[in-house]
Length: 213
Image (tube, rainbow, N blue to C red; front, side):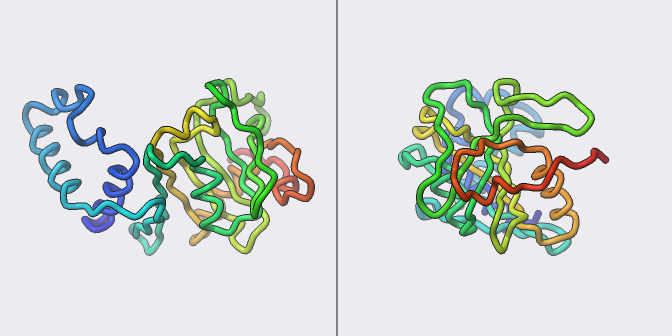
């Protein structure tokens, strides 16, 4: 990742939660000595020069090898669900399955209206291993389904809970630009078991679970 790409990522982080790099919350003493102190000063200088993006504007970040990711962010002032209102509309996805922790305040039901169904994942089904549910998994990721870009795979930091709306957040998404990304999408799409509550939702037809490699 070059400096321009790093600046884009820092911009998204600032948009979501600027206190992370502003020394609030007792973070800075950890970097108070030695080479770590120099690294922190460089991080703060980079973040200070990064322009704040418009609300919910996606940032495209180039990676080595010609690949790229798209970084999404929302501020704490934007009381919208990250997956439903920011990620899915960008890709014009008919459906999105979201794996997240659903044990906090205000669990959001699967969303069936509008242009996209956004389904809670009920459990992760690892082939030849015991499945586990959302109460046992704190990861946050999503797979798209049923569009011209079916291989959208995202990793984020938001649960589908009402209590998360007041928080800033980010998601990083791959859109199947390489064979490796398609293979990674296939694996994640093959281990979800979403709620099937939306009539006609494309995510109901996700492929069956795949063998572990």
